[in-house]
Image (tube, each protein chain N blue to C red):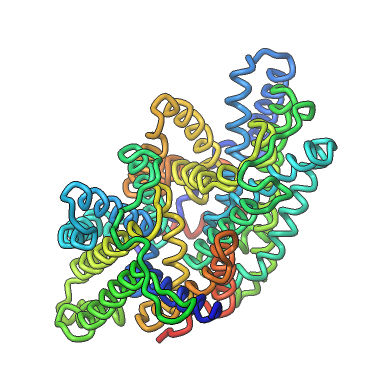
Amino acid sequence: MQVIQVIINGILLGGIYALLGVGMTMMFGIVKLTNLAHGEFVIIGAYLSTILASALGVDPILTIIVTVPIMFLVGMGLQAGLINRVMKIGSEPALLVTFGLSIILADAMLLVFSADAQRANVPYNTASIKIANGLNISTLDLIVFGISLATIVVLSVFLKKTFLGRSIRATSDDLEAASLMGVNVNRTYAIAMGIAMATAAIAGMCVSMKWVFYPSSGGNYLLTAFGVVVIGGMGSIPGTMIAGLILGLAQVIGGANYGQLIAYVLMVLFLAVRPQGLFSK
Amino acid sequence: MENNGIALRKPVKILDGIPMLIICIVICIALYILGITKTFSNNTMRYLLKIFLYITMGEMWNLMSGFTGMTSLGQQVFVGIAGYSVAVFTSTFKMSMWLGLLVGAVIGVVFALLLSLILFRMRGMYFAVATWLIAEAVRLWFNSWRFVKQGAGMTIATSQIPKVRELYIYALTLCIIALVVVYILLRTKTGLGLTAMRDDADASSSVGVNIFKSKLLCYLICSLFIALAGGMFALQKGSVLPSSSFSIDWTVAMVFIVIIGGVGTMAGPILGGIVYVILSEFLAHFPGWSNIILGAIAILVIIFLPDGIIGTLQKKLNFEIFSQKRLSEPKKVKGLKEKANMA
């Protein structure tokens, strides 16, 4: 029973990890940018959801109706106004600019929200569903897992079936050919960043319900997101799911003291042995 | 190819050869004398020793990123290891701080040697994030390791903490050695190979640059000096904590110093280190704003002055300071240059 419980918890944790990684993977695969500010975007999403939910007295899940469009527009603006410009200088400067951005955002949040721990309170916080004797599934975990899965499925259908999705994938596959076919590359990049930010908003909402967070938590979530990208392979959505599960299991098995450490060590080993990921194209 | 004329115009090297050597030696001796004779106040020396240590770290980060293309976001791991080594040796073992510093440096180098096995399989952003992951993993380990008192941190035995004046002398010496080592390394064949490797790893490898060996040498030197500087920072502060000794802020400082001064220039980190310490001391009056302003400045510099202050000045005014290039074949270049000028 114990083993099954651990596996179930790991799988449920993997859902939110995959959601954390999916925005990062899009930027990686499409824009060819390592966005080191992704963790801060998630935390911004978490703050927005927490504040909105308590101000309006609604369930945090409903806040994504507002936060997702806002974050999408901010992401587009950021990419169009700043990052597209820096990427013309080179990939190293672009990496360092996102690094600078992450430092700025983390400290700005510290100024605005103070260093206090935050958490969005939901009534089903401690509720759980009993499956068998000694086997429980937390309702919150299940909801978060459902949201993550739904987001990823919607995103992959969007990328596969819609015209915009196809043009995004075309840019990712062959930049020059796509731009010759009339795809506006700068605009595509801006949309990709917008989508990445929107997923960060949803991930942030999940984080705010599930864990306590601080303005400085961004680095932690960035590295998790990166781990998902590394283990799953760039731009691969099924890979992202599997990678989330692997990290989730590592975290649950390692427990509170060593979970994060084991996850990080695992990521480094994956990077060294198979840097192209499990599911690279 | 309209740039040919400019590219072939030989930059005026200022401070090169014997005059440079003399000026540098005079400056160093002056700094020593002013420190030993207590001409500087303790406060001035505290600023200066910070500047020396940051220059050392910046110069090392620059050696890795600017000259060899290994952009690391995890060099703070060596700062932390050395700081903890000093703390463990002075308070747990009640031994000399020198032993702590030495062991810290040795552990740093051995750790770097082990890491190179994993890290050198990666390039670019993979390398950058992997180094960060490793630093975070080590921080987490120290956070739950009983021997180093977990998250509570450790203090360095007060009897072992040197006076500001002594620490000033050590920091100055470390900084001078670091600068000399980087200069010599870049002027030798290895340095030439490293720069070639940064510009095109495959091409340089095909003309006989031993990439692994050159990178390793560079990485080990960086780890050694950053560990030593980190140990001295710990001595200056008097305590170590997992959250601050392994903080990403160390890397933020190194990146800032190099970007402001100019990536891939010897003089850049010197200027960057001075600017960084002055700025951060000034920004200490505005708690919480420090990193925001430093980050914004760094982003603006990347956009508008991608070569940094020194790099931009060098290009605009066509001079080179502490040039690492060995332009000692004037005859051949001269002929070409005249042709280019005529054309």
